[in-house]
Image 1 (cartoon, rainbow, N blue to C red):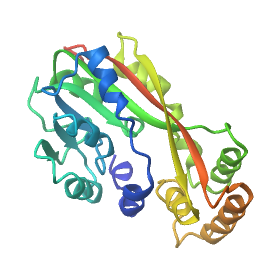
Image 2: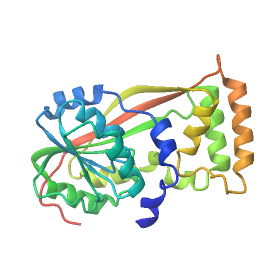
Image 3: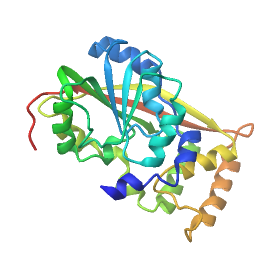
Length: 257
């Protein structure tokens, strides 16, 4: 657990600058599907630098940002300081530190694949009110939609330190465990980022599985990154396409591991 918590400690600045935001349409969708209102209390678990929390705070919600990594938590507190409804908590998915039956919606943005799904399930059942919901959300990079993204995926497979082991697209079984016996529904939103080379480099280095400057393959990766950028850039920019996936279902009470 401690290893996964500390994975992003040296990448906070790049994470803040270069990771994608979440479509605001997610909030409106959850209003329609799950009865979320501006009065709903949200637990954003693995809240990181606050990218997902922000769209709910802008909606007027009280959001408890549950984040175990000190650097990420401090960045979230700084970035979201304008929102009086943001409550920062040093906790985990398995031990949120929140009171029982205290939130209407539990969310996790780009984080659930780090959780222990069964222990997180029990904790969600404890903190979510009767009839409440959970939404597990990822900005899922399209792997093969363009020649640029195909080359980028090949670079990650070549240089990623443990890329294939921690890819969040392998979380399907854990999602099923977390919601069972409920079956999660899926809603997909389009999302996109555009980068110049500096932004592209920062986006790569924001990922916990890419080599850092002290790593023996770092320079080779950056050189290949430049080649990929030059091959695919259009007017000095490359485009990252994402499917923002929202897996959502009610949280059932009285869960046990």
